Length: 192
Image (cartoon, rainbow, N blue to C red; front, side, top):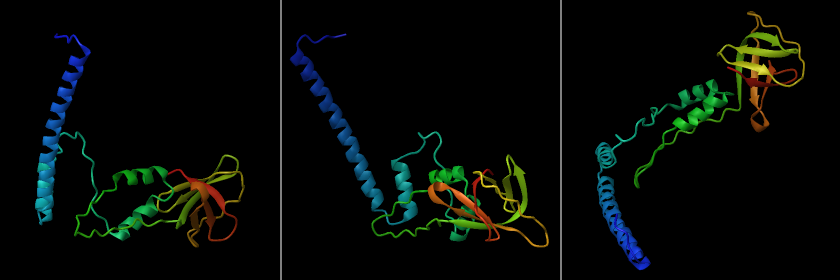
């Protein structure tokens, strides 16, 4: 290995290497900017996408993210009701949401995910566990358990008169449940 004798020679060699690398990166960046401008000038969206795909190949990504298709507002409401109270599903949904970048003259319709603050569902059965705590099974498959120490006698579930449970969001991510809109609310958490 060649060893430079003086400090000034080392500095001079280092600065020459940095200058050469900066010219190399500048020329690559200039070429990419020219390609980006050419893609932006393409009027047809499908051809523009092909241009960007050719400019930035994704073969180096081992597992590209999956983007779900655009859903109608009604299906988003159903999905939000299904995931109501499920903290893991809400976090997963935030990771999968696609990002849409509009061009200068394009307008993108945004479908806002509705903020659901309460649901009302028919109760299929009620169990007790622990020290007089309730486990409520809803018809949509959700299971909610009582948290806290407020004891309450479980209401009767019958086929003649359906029992409706209303679950509302509370402060700091908590939930409260009330049967048939009357009586005392109990604090609950979703377990399934």
